Length: 639
Image 1: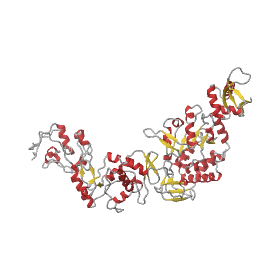
Image 2 (image 1 turned 90 degrees about the vertical axis):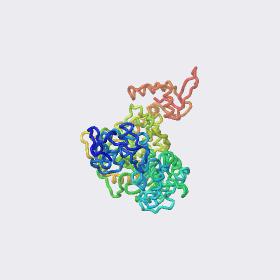
Image 3 (image 1 turned 135 degrees about the horizontal axis):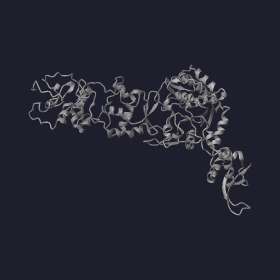
Image 4 (image 1 turned 180 degrees about the horizontal axis):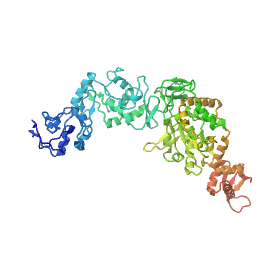
Protein backbone atom coordinates (compact mmCIF):
# COMPACT_ATOMS: atom_id res chain seq x y z
CA UNK A 1 0.00 0.00 0.00
CA UNK A 2 1.35 3.40 -0.94
CA UNK A 3 1.58 5.77 2.05
CA UNK A 4 -1.06 8.45 2.11
CA UNK A 5 1.36 11.28 2.72
CA UNK A 6 4.76 11.67 1.17
CA UNK A 7 7.25 14.51 1.28
CA UNK A 8 6.88 16.69 -1.80
CA UNK A 9 10.16 18.07 -3.15
CA UNK A 10 9.41 21.10 -5.31
CA UNK A 11 11.86 20.01 -7.98
CA UNK A 12 10.10 16.72 -8.85
CA UNK A 13 6.84 17.44 -10.70
CA UNK A 14 4.81 14.81 -12.46
CA UNK A 15 2.15 14.82 -15.18
CA UNK A 16 -0.65 17.39 -14.81
CA UNK A 17 1.29 19.28 -12.17
CA UNK A 18 1.90 16.25 -9.90
CA UNK A 19 5.28 15.04 -8.78
CA UNK A 20 7.22 11.83 -9.18
CA UNK A 21 8.22 10.20 -5.89
CA UNK A 22 11.88 9.54 -5.53
CA UNK A 23 13.09 5.93 -5.48
CA UNK A 24 13.66 6.21 -1.74
CA UNK A 25 10.00 7.17 -1.20
CA UNK A 26 8.60 4.14 -3.05
CA UNK A 27 8.15 0.94 -1.04
CA UNK A 28 10.30 -2.06 -1.96
CA UNK A 29 8.56 -4.93 -3.69
CA UNK A 30 9.46 -8.54 -3.11
CA UNK A 31 11.78 -9.78 -5.85
CA UNK A 32 12.07 -6.36 -7.52
CA UNK A 33 15.48 -5.26 -8.68
CA UNK A 34 16.30 -1.76 -7.44
CA UNK A 35 16.70 0.85 -10.14
CA UNK A 36 20.23 1.51 -11.30
CA UNK A 37 19.89 5.27 -11.52
CA UNK A 38 17.29 7.99 -11.47
CA UNK A 39 17.28 8.44 -15.22
CA UNK A 40 16.21 4.83 -15.63
CA UNK A 41 13.37 5.45 -13.18
CA UNK A 42 12.12 8.35 -15.29
CA UNK A 43 12.35 6.32 -18.46
CA UNK A 44 10.32 3.51 -16.98
CA UNK A 45 7.77 5.99 -15.68
CA UNK A 46 7.15 7.25 -19.21
CA UNK A 47 6.37 3.97 -20.94
CA UNK A 48 6.36 0.22 -20.86
CA UNK A 49 9.29 -1.65 -19.25
CA UNK A 50 11.94 -2.99 -21.57
CA UNK A 51 11.44 -6.44 -22.97
CA UNK A 52 7.65 -6.47 -22.71
CA UNK A 53 5.07 -6.21 -25.50
CA UNK A 54 2.65 -3.32 -25.21
CA UNK A 55 -0.08 -5.72 -26.36
CA UNK A 56 0.05 -7.75 -23.16
CA UNK A 57 0.43 -4.71 -20.89
CA UNK A 58 3.07 -3.98 -18.23
CA UNK A 59 3.75 -6.33 -15.31
CA UNK A 60 2.49 -5.48 -11.87
CA UNK A 61 5.96 -4.71 -10.58
CA UNK A 62 6.39 -1.85 -13.07
CA UNK A 63 3.46 0.03 -11.55
CA UNK A 64 5.66 0.95 -8.63
CA UNK A 65 7.64 3.19 -10.93
CA UNK A 66 4.63 4.86 -12.57
CA UNK A 67 3.47 8.39 -12.02
CA UNK A 68 1.74 8.80 -8.62
CA UNK A 69 -1.47 9.76 -10.39
CA UNK A 70 -1.58 6.21 -11.81
CA UNK A 71 -0.86 4.40 -8.50
CA UNK A 72 -4.13 3.04 -7.10
CA UNK A 73 -4.97 4.46 -3.71
CA UNK A 74 -2.76 7.51 -4.01
CA UNK A 75 -4.50 10.61 -2.63
CA UNK A 76 -3.53 12.85 -5.57
CA UNK A 77 -6.31 13.37 -8.15
CA UNK A 78 -6.12 11.15 -11.22
CA UNK A 79 -6.14 12.92 -14.60
CA UNK A 80 -8.39 11.63 -17.41
CA UNK A 81 -7.06 8.30 -18.65
CA UNK A 82 -5.78 8.08 -22.21
CA UNK A 83 -3.89 5.47 -24.17
CA UNK A 84 -0.30 4.97 -23.03
CA UNK A 85 1.11 6.11 -26.38
CA UNK A 86 -1.17 9.14 -26.65
CA UNK A 87 -0.70 10.17 -23.01
CA UNK A 88 3.03 10.56 -23.42
CA UNK A 89 3.01 12.32 -26.77
CA UNK A 90 1.41 15.52 -25.53
CA UNK A 91 3.21 18.79 -25.04
CA UNK A 92 5.16 19.33 -21.84
CA UNK A 93 2.89 20.54 -19.11
CA UNK A 94 -0.35 19.87 -21.03
CA UNK A 95 -3.15 17.76 -19.49
CA UNK A 96 -2.31 14.14 -20.05
CA UNK A 97 1.00 15.07 -21.64
CA UNK A 98 4.60 14.93 -20.54
CA UNK A 99 5.70 16.95 -17.53
CA UNK A 100 8.22 19.65 -18.27
CA UNK A 101 11.07 17.91 -16.47
CA UNK A 102 10.24 14.45 -17.75
CA UNK A 103 10.25 15.74 -21.35
CA UNK A 104 14.03 15.90 -21.13
CA UNK A 105 14.11 12.10 -20.76
CA UNK A 106 11.36 11.31 -23.22
CA UNK A 107 13.31 8.93 -25.45
CA UNK A 108 13.56 5.24 -24.74
CA UNK A 109 16.81 3.29 -25.03
CA UNK A 110 18.05 3.10 -28.63
CA UNK A 111 16.90 -0.46 -29.22
CA UNK A 112 13.35 0.49 -28.27
CA UNK A 113 13.27 3.64 -30.41
CA UNK A 114 13.42 1.45 -33.52
CA UNK A 115 10.32 -0.48 -32.47
CA UNK A 116 7.40 0.18 -34.82
CA UNK A 117 3.86 -0.03 -33.46
CA UNK A 118 1.52 -1.11 -36.25
CA UNK A 119 -2.22 -1.34 -35.99
CA UNK A 120 -4.35 -3.70 -38.00
CA UNK A 121 -8.10 -3.82 -38.44
CA UNK A 122 -8.53 -5.57 -35.08
CA UNK A 123 -7.01 -2.49 -33.41
CA UNK A 124 -4.55 -4.64 -31.47
CA UNK A 125 -1.00 -3.42 -31.04
CA UNK A 126 2.20 -5.31 -31.45
CA UNK A 127 5.76 -4.34 -30.77
CA UNK A 128 7.74 -6.56 -33.11
CA UNK A 129 7.77 -7.23 -36.82
CA UNK A 130 4.92 -9.26 -38.33
CA UNK A 131 5.43 -12.97 -38.34
CA UNK A 132 7.77 -13.07 -35.35
CA UNK A 133 7.29 -15.55 -32.54
CA UNK A 134 6.03 -12.87 -30.16
CA UNK A 135 3.22 -11.99 -32.58
CA UNK A 136 1.33 -15.26 -32.33
CA UNK A 137 -1.32 -13.78 -30.11
CA UNK A 138 -1.64 -10.74 -32.38
CA UNK A 139 -1.94 -12.88 -35.52
CA UNK A 140 -4.62 -15.01 -33.91
CA UNK A 141 -6.65 -11.96 -33.00
CA UNK A 142 -6.19 -10.49 -36.45
CA UNK A 143 -7.44 -13.66 -38.11
CA UNK A 144 -10.45 -13.70 -35.79
CA UNK A 145 -11.15 -10.08 -36.63
CA UNK A 146 -10.95 -10.82 -40.34
CA UNK A 147 -13.38 -13.72 -40.06
CA UNK A 148 -15.79 -11.53 -38.13
CA UNK A 149 -15.57 -8.75 -40.70
CA UNK A 150 -13.82 -6.12 -38.59
CA UNK A 151 -13.35 -2.50 -39.62
CA UNK A 152 -11.07 -1.91 -42.64
CA UNK A 153 -7.66 -0.25 -42.47
CA UNK A 154 -7.74 3.43 -43.36
CA UNK A 155 -5.69 4.19 -46.48
CA UNK A 156 -6.71 7.81 -46.97
CA UNK A 157 -3.20 9.16 -46.42
CA UNK A 158 -1.22 6.52 -48.26
CA UNK A 159 -0.35 6.98 -51.91
CA UNK A 160 -1.96 9.04 -54.66
CA UNK A 161 -4.04 6.14 -55.93
CA UNK A 162 -6.69 6.83 -53.30
CA UNK A 163 -6.88 10.44 -54.44
CA UNK A 164 -7.08 10.02 -58.20
CA UNK A 165 -9.01 6.87 -59.12
CA UNK A 166 -10.29 4.22 -56.67
CA UNK A 167 -8.74 0.80 -57.10
CA UNK A 168 -10.34 -2.60 -56.51
CA UNK A 169 -8.60 -2.79 -53.14
CA UNK A 170 -10.08 0.50 -51.96
CA UNK A 171 -13.58 -0.36 -53.15
CA UNK A 172 -13.46 -3.73 -51.37
CA UNK A 173 -12.40 -2.11 -48.12
CA UNK A 174 -15.19 0.44 -48.43
CA UNK A 175 -17.72 -2.32 -48.99
CA UNK A 176 -18.57 -1.11 -52.49
CA UNK A 177 -17.13 -4.17 -54.25
CA UNK A 178 -17.40 -7.82 -53.34
CA UNK A 179 -14.08 -9.54 -52.66
CA UNK A 180 -13.13 -12.95 -53.95
CA UNK A 181 -12.40 -15.83 -51.58
CA UNK A 182 -8.63 -15.48 -52.00
CA UNK A 183 -8.58 -11.68 -51.98
CA UNK A 184 -6.40 -11.56 -48.85
CA UNK A 185 -4.34 -14.64 -49.74
CA UNK A 186 -1.21 -13.80 -51.74
CA UNK A 187 1.62 -15.77 -53.29
CA UNK A 188 4.75 -16.36 -51.26
CA UNK A 189 7.24 -13.46 -50.93
CA UNK A 190 9.68 -15.63 -52.90
CA UNK A 191 7.40 -15.33 -55.98
CA UNK A 192 8.07 -11.64 -56.66
CA UNK A 193 6.55 -11.51 -60.15
CA UNK A 194 3.28 -13.15 -59.04
CA UNK A 195 3.01 -10.82 -56.05
CA UNK A 196 3.68 -7.79 -58.27
CA UNK A 197 0.97 -8.92 -60.67
CA UNK A 198 -1.55 -9.15 -57.82
CA UNK A 199 -0.60 -5.68 -56.62
CA UNK A 200 -0.99 -4.21 -60.11
CA UNK A 201 -4.41 -5.83 -60.53
CA UNK A 202 -5.75 -4.85 -57.09
CA UNK A 203 -3.97 -1.65 -56.01
CA UNK A 204 -3.07 0.04 -59.31
CA UNK A 205 -6.03 -0.87 -61.52
CA UNK A 206 -9.50 0.68 -61.61
CA UNK A 207 -12.58 -1.59 -61.52
CA UNK A 208 -13.07 -1.04 -65.25
CA UNK A 209 -9.58 -2.42 -65.97
CA UNK A 210 -7.50 0.74 -66.53
CA UNK A 211 -4.10 0.81 -64.88
CA UNK A 212 -3.05 3.80 -62.82
CA UNK A 213 0.67 3.01 -62.59
CA UNK A 214 3.31 3.21 -65.33
CA UNK A 215 7.08 3.06 -65.59
CA UNK A 216 8.08 5.44 -68.37
CA UNK A 217 11.42 6.94 -69.35
CA UNK A 218 13.16 5.79 -66.18
CA UNK A 219 10.57 7.19 -63.74
CA UNK A 220 7.34 6.12 -62.04
CA UNK A 221 4.15 7.82 -63.21
CA UNK A 222 0.73 7.74 -61.57
CA UNK A 223 -2.73 8.73 -62.73
CA UNK A 224 -3.86 11.98 -61.05
CA UNK A 225 -7.56 12.36 -61.99
CA UNK A 226 -6.88 14.37 -65.20
CA UNK A 227 -3.39 13.43 -66.35
CA UNK A 228 -0.39 11.28 -65.50
CA UNK A 229 2.15 12.81 -63.16
CA UNK A 230 5.75 11.85 -62.47
CA UNK A 231 6.52 10.70 -58.92
CA UNK A 232 9.73 12.24 -57.66
CA UNK A 233 10.45 9.31 -55.31
CA UNK A 234 9.30 5.74 -54.72
CA UNK A 235 7.45 6.57 -51.49
CA UNK A 236 4.29 7.37 -53.45
CA UNK A 237 4.55 3.89 -54.97
CA UNK A 238 5.63 1.95 -51.88
CA UNK A 239 3.13 3.44 -49.42
CA UNK A 240 0.02 1.64 -50.79
CA UNK A 241 2.09 -1.51 -51.30
CA UNK A 242 3.06 -1.56 -47.63
CA UNK A 243 -0.53 -0.95 -46.55
CA UNK A 244 -1.86 -3.73 -48.77
CA UNK A 245 0.75 -6.39 -47.97
CA UNK A 246 0.39 -6.03 -44.22
CA UNK A 247 -3.19 -7.25 -44.55
CA UNK A 248 -2.55 -10.42 -46.52
CA UNK A 249 -1.26 -13.92 -45.78
CA UNK A 250 0.38 -16.70 -47.79
CA UNK A 251 0.87 -20.44 -47.55
CA UNK A 252 -1.50 -23.35 -47.09
CA UNK A 253 -4.47 -23.00 -44.78
CA UNK A 254 -2.92 -25.26 -42.17
CA UNK A 255 0.34 -23.24 -42.24
CA UNK A 256 -0.94 -19.81 -43.20
CA UNK A 257 1.44 -16.96 -42.33
CA UNK A 258 1.31 -13.20 -42.41
CA UNK A 259 2.96 -11.81 -45.55
CA UNK A 260 4.96 -9.47 -43.25
CA UNK A 261 6.19 -6.69 -45.56
CA UNK A 262 9.72 -5.44 -44.96
CA UNK A 263 12.07 -3.08 -46.76
CA UNK A 264 13.81 -6.02 -48.40
CA UNK A 265 10.59 -7.73 -49.49
CA UNK A 266 9.01 -4.55 -50.84
CA UNK A 267 12.26 -3.58 -52.55
CA UNK A 268 12.37 -6.93 -54.35
CA UNK A 269 9.02 -6.07 -55.99
CA UNK A 270 10.28 -2.94 -57.75
CA UNK A 271 11.89 -4.75 -60.69
CA UNK A 272 8.82 -6.94 -61.42
CA UNK A 273 6.63 -3.85 -61.22
CA UNK A 274 8.82 -2.12 -63.80
CA UNK A 275 8.48 -5.11 -66.12
CA UNK A 276 4.69 -5.23 -65.76
CA UNK A 277 4.00 -1.49 -66.10
CA UNK A 278 6.68 -0.38 -68.58
CA UNK A 279 5.55 1.88 -71.42
CA UNK A 280 7.25 2.58 -74.72
CA UNK A 281 9.62 5.55 -74.46
CA UNK A 282 7.85 7.41 -77.27
CA UNK A 283 4.37 7.12 -75.75
CA UNK A 284 2.79 10.52 -74.98
CA UNK A 285 0.11 11.32 -75.69
CA UNK A 286 -1.32 7.90 -76.49
CA UNK A 287 -4.29 5.67 -75.87
CA UNK A 288 -3.15 2.77 -73.70
CA UNK A 289 -6.14 0.70 -74.77
CA UNK A 290 -5.09 1.16 -78.45
CA UNK A 291 -8.30 2.87 -79.56
CA UNK A 292 -8.05 4.65 -82.89
CA UNK A 293 -10.46 7.56 -82.33
CA UNK A 294 -10.12 10.28 -81.37
CA UNK A 295 -6.50 10.74 -82.38
CA UNK A 296 -4.25 11.03 -79.34
CA UNK A 297 -2.19 13.83 -80.87
CA UNK A 298 -5.42 15.80 -81.46
CA UNK A 299 -6.77 15.41 -77.93
CA UNK A 300 -6.22 17.89 -75.07
CA UNK A 301 -6.95 17.25 -71.39
CA UNK A 302 -9.09 20.06 -69.93
CA UNK A 303 -10.52 20.56 -66.46
CA UNK A 304 -13.93 19.25 -67.57
CA UNK A 305 -12.85 16.41 -69.88
CA UNK A 306 -10.80 15.37 -72.89
CA UNK A 307 -11.31 17.70 -75.85
CA UNK A 308 -11.21 16.28 -79.37
CA UNK A 309 -9.75 19.10 -81.47
CA UNK A 310 -11.22 17.76 -84.70
CA UNK A 311 -14.85 17.50 -83.56
CA UNK A 312 -14.71 19.94 -80.56
CA UNK A 313 -16.42 17.30 -78.38
CA UNK A 314 -15.64 16.43 -74.77
CA UNK A 315 -14.91 12.93 -73.49
CA UNK A 316 -14.67 11.90 -69.81
CA UNK A 317 -11.23 11.69 -68.20
CA UNK A 318 -9.75 8.21 -68.18
CA UNK A 319 -6.38 6.64 -67.26
CA UNK A 320 -6.46 5.01 -70.69
CA UNK A 321 -5.34 8.35 -72.17
CA UNK A 322 -1.66 8.73 -71.31
CA UNK A 323 -0.79 12.42 -71.19
CA UNK A 324 1.55 14.23 -68.84
CA UNK A 325 -0.21 17.60 -68.92
CA UNK A 326 -3.66 19.06 -68.44
CA UNK A 327 -4.97 22.60 -68.77
CA UNK A 328 -6.26 24.19 -65.60
CA UNK A 329 -9.56 25.56 -66.93
CA UNK A 330 -12.71 24.17 -68.50
CA UNK A 331 -13.58 24.20 -72.16
CA UNK A 332 -16.33 26.66 -73.05
CA UNK A 333 -17.06 26.94 -76.80
CA UNK A 334 -18.87 30.26 -76.31
CA UNK A 335 -16.12 32.04 -74.31
CA UNK A 336 -14.56 35.21 -75.77
CA UNK A 337 -11.56 37.39 -74.93
CA UNK A 338 -12.24 41.07 -75.73
CA UNK A 339 -9.49 42.42 -73.45
CA UNK A 340 -6.85 40.16 -75.01
CA UNK A 341 -7.85 41.01 -78.58
CA UNK A 342 -7.86 44.74 -77.82
CA UNK A 343 -4.38 44.43 -76.33
CA UNK A 344 -3.07 42.69 -79.47
CA UNK A 345 -4.63 45.28 -81.79
CA UNK A 346 -2.85 47.99 -79.84
CA UNK A 347 0.68 46.51 -79.71
CA UNK A 348 0.56 45.21 -83.31
CA UNK A 349 -1.03 48.28 -84.84
CA UNK A 350 2.02 48.69 -87.12
CA UNK A 351 1.93 45.01 -88.27
CA UNK A 352 -1.46 43.21 -88.02
CA UNK A 353 0.03 40.01 -89.46
CA UNK A 354 2.13 39.67 -86.31
CA UNK A 355 -1.05 39.08 -84.27
CA UNK A 356 -2.01 36.30 -86.70
CA UNK A 357 1.40 34.62 -86.26
CA UNK A 358 1.07 34.78 -82.45
CA UNK A 359 -2.41 33.26 -82.69
CA UNK A 360 -1.20 30.40 -84.88
CA UNK A 361 1.86 29.71 -82.72
CA UNK A 362 -0.24 29.61 -79.54
CA UNK A 363 -2.52 27.00 -81.12
CA UNK A 364 0.58 25.14 -82.30
CA UNK A 365 1.84 24.94 -78.70
CA UNK A 366 -1.54 23.75 -77.37
CA UNK A 367 -1.74 21.00 -79.97
CA UNK A 368 1.53 19.45 -78.79
CA UNK A 369 2.82 19.29 -82.35
CA UNK A 370 6.50 19.66 -83.25
CA UNK A 371 6.66 18.95 -86.98
CA UNK A 372 6.97 22.64 -87.96
CA UNK A 373 10.27 22.83 -86.03
CA UNK A 374 9.95 26.53 -85.29
CA UNK A 375 10.57 28.82 -82.31
CA UNK A 376 9.28 32.37 -81.79
CA UNK A 377 11.35 35.47 -81.05
CA UNK A 378 9.63 38.62 -79.73
CA UNK A 379 11.78 41.78 -79.85
CA UNK A 380 10.73 45.15 -78.52
CA UNK A 381 11.61 48.04 -76.20
CA UNK A 382 10.95 47.87 -72.43
CA UNK A 383 7.28 47.88 -71.41
CA UNK A 384 6.10 47.05 -74.90
CA UNK A 385 3.94 44.02 -74.02
CA UNK A 386 6.49 41.19 -74.06
CA UNK A 387 5.88 40.28 -70.40
CA UNK A 388 2.11 40.26 -70.84
CA UNK A 389 2.39 37.92 -73.84
CA UNK A 390 4.70 35.49 -72.06
CA UNK A 391 2.69 35.51 -68.83
CA UNK A 392 -0.60 34.91 -70.64
CA UNK A 393 0.77 32.00 -72.66
CA UNK A 394 2.26 30.39 -69.54
CA UNK A 395 -1.09 30.68 -67.75
CA UNK A 396 -2.83 29.22 -70.78
CA UNK A 397 -0.46 26.25 -71.05
CA UNK A 398 -0.32 25.78 -67.27
CA UNK A 399 2.36 26.57 -64.71
CA UNK A 400 3.33 22.89 -64.46
CA UNK A 401 3.66 22.60 -68.24
CA UNK A 402 5.94 25.62 -68.76
CA UNK A 403 9.38 26.69 -67.59
CA UNK A 404 11.44 29.88 -67.74
CA UNK A 405 15.12 28.97 -68.28
CA UNK A 406 17.90 31.37 -69.17
CA UNK A 407 20.51 31.11 -71.89
CA UNK A 408 23.08 30.50 -69.18
CA UNK A 409 21.13 27.66 -67.54
CA UNK A 410 20.30 26.11 -70.91
CA UNK A 411 23.97 25.91 -71.78
CA UNK A 412 24.89 24.38 -68.40
CA UNK A 413 25.42 20.68 -67.68
CA UNK A 414 21.96 20.18 -66.14
CA UNK A 415 20.16 22.69 -68.36
CA UNK A 416 18.06 20.16 -70.26
CA UNK A 417 16.73 18.46 -67.12
CA UNK A 418 14.29 21.29 -66.39
CA UNK A 419 12.75 20.91 -69.86
CA UNK A 420 11.69 17.28 -69.42
CA UNK A 421 7.90 17.07 -69.75
CA UNK A 422 7.46 20.82 -70.42
CA UNK A 423 5.41 22.07 -73.36
CA UNK A 424 6.67 25.66 -73.35
CA UNK A 425 9.99 27.29 -72.46
CA UNK A 426 10.01 31.09 -72.25
CA UNK A 427 13.46 32.69 -72.14
CA UNK A 428 12.94 36.16 -70.73
CA UNK A 429 15.35 38.98 -71.62
CA UNK A 430 17.31 36.84 -74.09
CA UNK A 431 20.10 39.28 -74.78
CA UNK A 432 23.29 37.63 -75.90
CA UNK A 433 25.04 40.23 -78.01
CA UNK A 434 28.10 39.75 -75.81
CA UNK A 435 27.06 36.73 -73.76
CA UNK A 436 29.23 33.66 -74.21
CA UNK A 437 26.40 31.38 -73.09
CA UNK A 438 24.32 32.45 -76.10
CA UNK A 439 26.72 30.61 -78.34
CA UNK A 440 26.82 27.60 -76.01
CA UNK A 441 23.05 27.22 -76.15
CA UNK A 442 22.83 27.16 -79.97
CA UNK A 443 23.49 23.44 -80.24
CA UNK A 444 20.85 22.57 -77.66
CA UNK A 445 18.29 24.88 -79.23
CA UNK A 446 18.87 23.32 -82.64
CA UNK A 447 18.52 19.80 -81.23
CA UNK A 448 15.29 20.46 -79.33
CA UNK A 449 13.58 22.54 -82.03
CA UNK A 450 14.65 20.02 -84.67
CA UNK A 451 13.09 17.08 -82.74
CA UNK A 452 16.43 15.37 -82.18
CA UNK A 453 16.86 12.91 -79.32
CA UNK A 454 18.81 14.46 -76.44
CA UNK A 455 20.44 13.27 -73.24
CA UNK A 456 19.36 15.24 -70.16
CA UNK A 457 21.63 14.98 -67.14
CA UNK A 458 19.29 14.96 -64.14
CA UNK A 459 21.20 15.80 -61.00
CA UNK A 460 21.22 12.85 -58.63
CA UNK A 461 19.28 10.67 -61.10
CA UNK A 462 19.94 8.64 -64.21
CA UNK A 463 20.21 10.32 -67.60
CA UNK A 464 16.97 10.98 -69.43
CA UNK A 465 17.00 10.19 -73.15
CA UNK A 466 14.30 11.12 -75.63
CA UNK A 467 12.71 13.86 -77.70
CA UNK A 468 11.63 16.89 -75.68
CA UNK A 469 8.13 18.22 -76.46
CA UNK A 470 9.23 21.78 -75.67
CA UNK A 471 8.48 24.80 -77.88
CA UNK A 472 10.54 27.95 -77.32
CA UNK A 473 9.66 31.63 -77.03
CA UNK A 474 12.43 34.20 -76.62
CA UNK A 475 11.71 37.68 -75.29
CA UNK A 476 14.41 40.31 -75.89
CA UNK A 477 14.90 44.06 -75.98
CA UNK A 478 17.39 43.59 -78.83
CA UNK A 479 18.10 40.88 -81.35
CA UNK A 480 20.24 38.21 -79.64
CA UNK A 481 23.53 37.06 -81.12
CA UNK A 482 23.73 33.31 -81.51
CA UNK A 483 27.18 32.38 -82.79
CA UNK A 484 26.42 30.02 -85.67
CA UNK A 485 28.62 30.16 -88.74
CA UNK A 486 26.26 27.99 -90.77
CA UNK A 487 23.27 30.25 -90.16
CA UNK A 488 21.08 27.29 -89.23
CA UNK A 489 19.75 28.88 -86.06
CA UNK A 490 18.04 31.74 -87.87
CA UNK A 491 16.12 29.28 -90.05
CA UNK A 492 14.50 27.85 -86.91
CA UNK A 493 13.09 31.16 -85.70
CA UNK A 494 10.12 33.33 -86.54
CA UNK A 495 10.03 36.88 -85.19
CA UNK A 496 7.61 39.53 -83.92
CA UNK A 497 8.69 43.15 -83.72
CA UNK A 498 7.10 45.46 -81.10
CA UNK A 499 7.58 49.20 -81.48
CA UNK A 500 5.31 50.94 -78.95
CA UNK A 501 6.46 51.38 -75.33
CA UNK A 502 4.14 51.96 -72.36
CA UNK A 503 6.77 53.08 -69.87
CA UNK A 504 5.07 56.42 -69.25
CA UNK A 505 1.50 55.04 -69.22
CA UNK A 506 1.42 51.45 -67.88
CA UNK A 507 -1.87 49.60 -67.32
CA UNK A 508 -1.25 47.80 -64.03
CA UNK A 509 -4.55 45.88 -64.07
CA UNK A 510 -4.25 44.57 -67.64
CA UNK A 511 -2.72 41.20 -66.73
CA UNK A 512 -5.39 40.52 -64.12
CA UNK A 513 -8.18 41.32 -66.57
CA UNK A 514 -6.63 39.15 -69.27
CA UNK A 515 -6.14 36.22 -66.86
CA UNK A 516 -9.93 36.05 -66.45
CA UNK A 517 -10.32 35.31 -70.16
CA UNK A 518 -8.32 32.07 -70.45
CA UNK A 519 -11.25 29.99 -71.82
CA UNK A 520 -11.80 32.67 -74.47
CA UNK A 521 -8.08 32.89 -75.29
CA UNK A 522 -8.12 29.11 -75.69
CA UNK A 523 -10.84 29.42 -78.34
CA UNK A 524 -8.83 32.22 -79.97
CA UNK A 525 -5.80 29.89 -80.14
CA UNK A 526 -7.89 27.08 -81.62
CA UNK A 527 -8.95 29.42 -84.40
CA UNK A 528 -5.28 30.09 -85.15
CA UNK A 529 -4.56 26.36 -85.15
CA UNK A 530 -7.34 25.83 -87.68
CA UNK A 531 -5.89 28.52 -89.96
CA UNK A 532 -2.43 26.91 -89.64
CA UNK A 533 -3.86 23.54 -90.70
CA UNK A 534 -5.45 25.14 -93.77
CA UNK A 535 -2.37 27.18 -94.79
CA UNK A 536 0.20 24.49 -93.99
CA UNK A 537 2.65 27.18 -92.83
CA UNK A 538 2.82 30.12 -90.45
CA UNK A 539 1.83 33.63 -91.45
CA UNK A 540 4.85 35.86 -92.03
CA UNK A 541 4.65 39.38 -90.54
CA UNK A 542 5.98 42.32 -92.53
CA UNK A 543 8.63 43.09 -89.91
CA UNK A 544 9.91 39.53 -89.56
CA UNK A 545 12.44 39.72 -92.41
CA UNK A 546 14.49 42.51 -90.90
CA UNK A 547 14.69 40.79 -87.48
CA UNK A 548 15.73 37.39 -88.86
CA UNK A 549 18.21 39.03 -91.24
CA UNK A 550 19.85 40.90 -88.38
CA UNK A 551 20.00 37.68 -86.34
CA UNK A 552 21.86 35.99 -89.19
CA UNK A 553 24.33 38.86 -89.54
CA UNK A 554 25.07 38.90 -85.81
CA UNK A 555 25.39 35.15 -85.57
CA UNK A 556 27.53 34.62 -88.67
CA UNK A 557 29.51 37.69 -89.79
CA UNK A 558 31.62 35.49 -92.08
CA UNK A 559 28.54 34.42 -94.02
CA UNK A 560 27.46 38.06 -94.35
CA UNK A 561 30.96 38.95 -95.61
CA UNK A 562 30.81 36.22 -98.25
CA UNK A 563 27.42 37.45 -99.45
CA UNK A 564 28.49 41.10 -99.67
CA UNK A 565 32.16 41.01 -100.70
CA UNK A 566 32.67 37.64 -102.44
CA UNK A 567 31.06 35.43 -105.04
CA UNK A 568 30.82 31.70 -104.45
CA UNK A 569 31.05 29.76 -107.73
CA UNK A 570 32.22 26.30 -106.67
CA UNK A 571 34.63 26.18 -109.63
CA UNK A 572 38.22 25.00 -109.21
CA UNK A 573 39.68 27.87 -111.24
CA UNK A 574 38.17 30.46 -108.86
CA UNK A 575 40.44 30.73 -105.83
CA UNK A 576 41.68 33.20 -103.22
CA UNK A 577 44.65 32.92 -100.93
CA UNK A 578 43.67 32.33 -97.29
CA UNK A 579 45.91 35.19 -96.13
CA UNK A 580 44.29 37.61 -98.60
CA UNK A 581 40.75 36.62 -97.57
CA UNK A 582 41.72 36.90 -93.89
CA UNK A 583 43.02 40.45 -94.33
CA UNK A 584 39.93 41.46 -96.33
CA UNK A 585 37.55 40.04 -93.73
CA UNK A 586 39.32 41.69 -90.78
CA UNK A 587 39.20 45.07 -92.51
CA UNK A 588 35.52 44.64 -93.32
CA UNK A 589 34.66 43.40 -89.82
CA UNK A 590 36.38 46.37 -88.13
CA UNK A 591 34.36 48.69 -90.35
CA UNK A 592 31.05 46.95 -89.57
CA UNK A 593 31.75 46.36 -85.84
CA UNK A 594 34.27 48.83 -84.39
CA UNK A 595 36.41 47.16 -81.77
CA UNK A 596 35.95 43.66 -83.17
CA UNK A 597 38.87 41.28 -82.81
CA UNK A 598 40.76 39.96 -85.83
CA UNK A 599 40.03 36.38 -86.85
CA UNK A 600 42.74 33.75 -87.14
CA UNK A 601 43.29 31.63 -90.25
CA UNK A 602 42.19 28.30 -88.66
CA UNK A 603 38.98 29.87 -87.38
CA UNK A 604 38.36 31.61 -90.71
CA UNK A 605 38.71 28.30 -92.58
CA UNK A 606 36.21 26.70 -90.21
CA UNK A 607 33.69 29.54 -90.54
CA UNK A 608 33.96 29.79 -94.34
CA UNK A 609 33.41 26.07 -94.89
CA UNK A 610 30.43 26.14 -92.48
CA UNK A 611 28.92 29.19 -94.19
CA UNK A 612 29.31 27.81 -97.73
CA UNK A 613 29.80 24.07 -98.37
CA UNK A 614 30.75 24.84 -102.02
CA UNK A 615 33.98 26.48 -100.84
CA UNK A 616 36.88 24.17 -99.99
CA UNK A 617 40.31 24.70 -98.50
CA UNK A 618 43.42 23.30 -100.19
CA UNK A 619 47.17 23.53 -99.80
CA UNK A 620 48.67 23.50 -103.28
CA UNK A 621 51.16 25.06 -105.68
CA UNK A 622 49.67 27.09 -108.52
CA UNK A 623 51.45 28.02 -111.77
CA UNK A 624 53.72 31.01 -111.31
CA UNK A 625 54.39 30.39 -107.60
CA UNK A 626 57.63 29.05 -106.21
CA UNK A 627 56.09 27.24 -103.20
CA UNK A 628 52.90 25.67 -101.99
CA UNK A 629 50.34 27.90 -100.27
CA UNK A 630 46.87 27.70 -98.68
CA UNK A 631 43.91 28.60 -100.91
CA UNK A 632 40.13 28.87 -100.77
CA UNK A 633 38.84 27.16 -103.92
CA UNK A 634 35.42 27.90 -105.45
CA UNK A 635 35.29 31.57 -104.47
CA UNK A 636 36.43 34.91 -105.88
CA UNK A 637 36.57 38.48 -104.62
CA UNK A 638 34.11 40.93 -106.21
CA UNK A 639 35.19 44.14 -104.55
